[in-house]
Length: 332
Image (tube, rainbow, N blue to C red):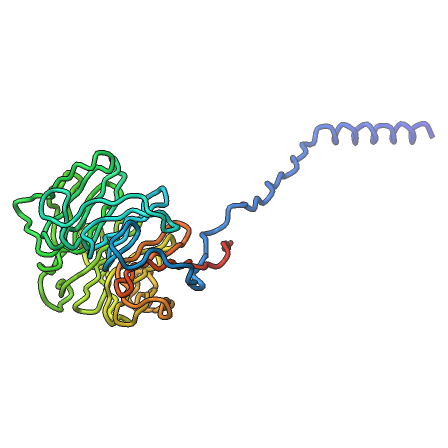
């Protein structure tokens, strides 16, 4: 009996020792799956455009217009109007209240003859650029002192410059209608390159009328005589041509989602086309608006919140529309 008890105690002792000496694998820790709260790109899209109001009327007084064309916006919600028939630039607020006017008819510095295009730049200071079409020149001035200068370059002679835009680094692009081309200048007003000649080929124009740029520096030219819109990269390489939907295209602008808006004098409306870099999709007409309000739409400018200003040369006023977008959604 004693032997049996001793044997059990020995076995128990060995079992305890064995357990203590055996290594134990650690528990495998699995990191929790983290689902980011930051989702994919915004998928907002344009639903419709609604008419809001009309600014100004035909006349020569403050806040009146005669054959208005090019439009430009600044960061203080002021609208600059190329009041071509009155040979001046007018500045109004978004409600149509008169703020200021610049210039009158003439050929000297600070005077204009049918100015058709304009641009406002804040790269270095507040600078206004004017396509002084009837005088075949581009003028610019600091909006503080309004001391005008003329773009001069021995390599460039303008013939009815019509449209003008300034990019984010201060480079200036001009549509030179009479020479059927566009020209790009550095921010020190030195010629960088020009594109175009008369004709209907891919690299040719017939009486181009307007120019716009997007956030990437791509360039959009209204080739009015050929009834098309052309898109170039910032170096002047042709990307795509919109060749449908237009009867008499005049001016172009882009909204914050990069939809392209073209005023079409022939159809008394504004056409909106897709802008996706693929020719088949680029020719897609998204919508058309303004047929009930517009007589002869020319200039166009779009604010950051989708307010659309269209100069109507037929009625000598500014029509205001509002773009309606889908609510901001995300993709996972």
